[in-house]
Length: 108
Image 1: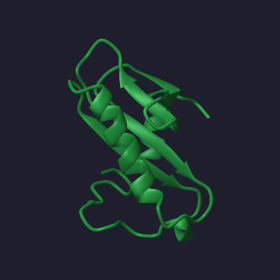
Image 2 (image 1 turned 45 degrees about the horizontal axis):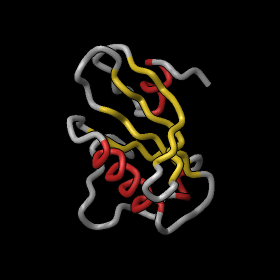
Image 3 (image 1 turned 90 degrees about the horizontal axis):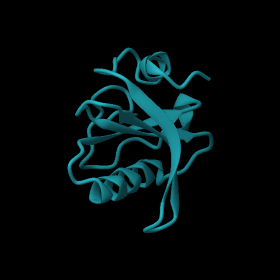
Image 4 (image 1 turned 120 degrees about the vertical axis):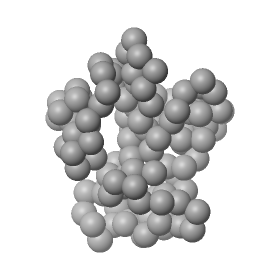
């Protein structure tokens, strides 16, 4: 899969990035949690997007994403950090826990 702006548009159902981004895998040492992918702005102050792919049912999928967004944000206080949870099948979505919002089909 391409990892540029087109991949982001596909993953988010049509959202576009406000400039160039780099996409990479990242390990957070605090709890040794691996983030599936990160869209990080290159040369501008746009938001960072944490991307997680969910291929099997997990009741904690949304909490897992929120933990990773929080850990990344804690390490990068100057950044606006957002999360995208991609379910390989809609039936895998355990639904949003209270306190989260569905701004763009998986983006909170």
